[in-house]
Image 1 (cartoon, rainbow, N blue to C red):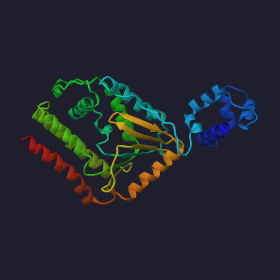
Image 2 (image 1 turned 45 degrees about the vertical axis):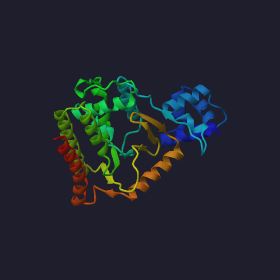
Image 3 (image 1 turned 180 degrees about the vertical axis):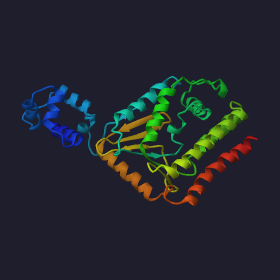
Image 4 (image 1 turned 135 degrees about the horizontal axis):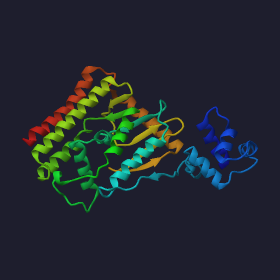
Length: 309
């Protein structure tokens, strides 16, 4: 039964290619030996099954799960600044291992501004890392913002943002998506750890990011933005692909549980599609609705700017 399931997964991956040829080439065995395995007259050894699963990026979890129990992966915990580099590298590896093509769509339930947009060499990006580290690490000593020096991981972060922006992306936002970073700016300003001049620069860069996303919504057909006023957004990320879906559920700001169970991913796709049906498309609803939505965020930024004065 398990061998049949593995062969079924491989057939889905290779399409019209010869299954026997594929198996023979990967395992370095004869065509006849491959045929005996594909016709179930011979069993794969454990090593052969692992080799095939690794080559085709098939999780063997499929063969140990049921409708009510699945196996998941977990990203490495981030507890100090140095862990961030491995976190970003791991996320970049996820992108590199997915079949990024016209068949891939990324869904993002944006409780906060998606972290991909703050992966840049800006004060805004530096501030987000500063906040993340203070919130995640119980031993982190609160220091003034300008005395915080994150490690240099610009190469990985720039490549990660580039990978994300190149994909077909569907994001769900609401009025509160921008609120968390504004609350963070106010908190660190009131505690004296963030100077007024620094906060103003961060707010200006945040304004520019919102303007960029508005232009992207208007001009980039591969980017779809929806306003969802009814559902609680969660920062879930779903990589939808017919052959290789992946569902990422946040456990904290820098931790995800990764699920590639076929049934769970299908249910997740249905859930996102249901949310979209109850949301307003800011790409197709017209200039007025789009301006109203983005102006709400600009007003929130401007209101905080007034408080800082």
